[in-house]
Image 1 (cartoon, chains in turn green, purple):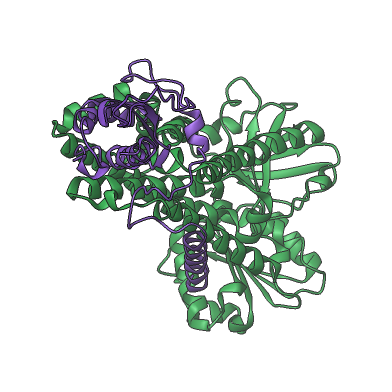
Image 2 (tube, rainbow over the protein chains, first blue to last red; image 1 turned 30 degrees about the vertical axis):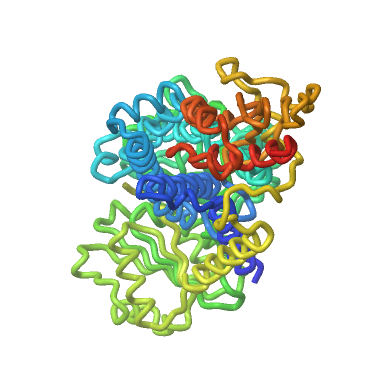
Length: 441
Length: 165
């Protein structure tokens, strides 16, 4: 109920902000803004500038890790929205630049190139704004799948960091030359407040809070254990870990302060329910950085951001039959979630893997199942042998249609189970998946 | 999804409507004599550039000189400040024997680079057009400087009124 309320509020406030942003231009329109085609082009360019900038601000707020929004909407969904909204910000800002150059050049009867050069070199704060746009463009382009796949996470991340600089650099040219801000103090204050709110949100939730948590709980690598070929569990010890309010299935962004790893931060979900003195993650050593993780030394200081995500036992309705479906290393957050349901909960675990070797944490799973009276179904083999269709799942869980489903695994598995759940008539609020919980690839 | 879209659109519509009711756009005219003269914050921040055509302390009072025997108006008269979208315009005219013999801008849009450059180009033409007029309506205005021209006419009209022309 509370989650729904916050979800609604976020939508409404985003709408109000967009309205005020558009109103900044609408209330200051005059006849001359429509006198002639070039004035109209300039007017349109301002609209694109305002809406584009607003979208970029919203895009930054979506990933600012504001805790009450995170816990209501879920990190993966916020990141999806960020990915969907930011390209539009970029398109709109590009349209602004093209149109304002065209409008001014047409009005002054000079060449477009000359006008662009004059604007960049003589108008106040235009040079930084141009640079800012280049930063935004780079972050945008490198986020397209084509470019991103050929790039290490770290490179992408650093380029993405420049987005903040890009947005900041463009601010002054808006306030100093934007016609709607020059004559309208109220509009100016609104705009300044908007930008300031982003700065404060990012400073607090992305920097101050994680930093103070990391320092307060004094997290250190306690042990690194090889679970099976290519899979390691990292035990992290700390003080008053319960104070983090982390639950099984949630994830942190982890930064190991060793010589080779301190500059990178990666999301991994907890693979065991946290105790007051320790956390555990289980990682498939595949990528460049996760291979290095296998070699991380005991005693290494660990900085965290989080916990994030709403993929957790408490997201389920009380008294429901729980079906946990994991694919390969995707079982790890489910293993942690499994621990946290009330004792009398009916639990079925469907564990998909291509080979016996991929059955990560099998022993632990069996032990837990034994303690709790849960059933674990190991579905080892090819995808065609285990279609994960509605009919197939029914063979193991006859009352699948009444269950609450948690799924974590490769995309194809998630899609197959999503279709099965739909066929079973399971509503969205009883189907839980979290893109960030799966780190198999 | 639909619920979110509806809330988003509701919010947008509410904010736009609210703002428009509070502060409707002035689409019919740019600047009129009835506009309040109190300088806007933007006006007080406006520092006339040294390159401006004869800028002077904007608060200058009219300084009438002794009328000549023919009783025709003479002296220096300062028009009201007219706020335009791009900044304030204030005109000062010098009248001799009932004829405007000189004009200058005490204030003009200069808050941003573009306004400043447009003002600097337009004001010499506006001065030319003002010499000898008996009504502000006779000032043709300068294209590409429609705001400044409108503001100029408005301020000029009040200056002419003070002069009794």
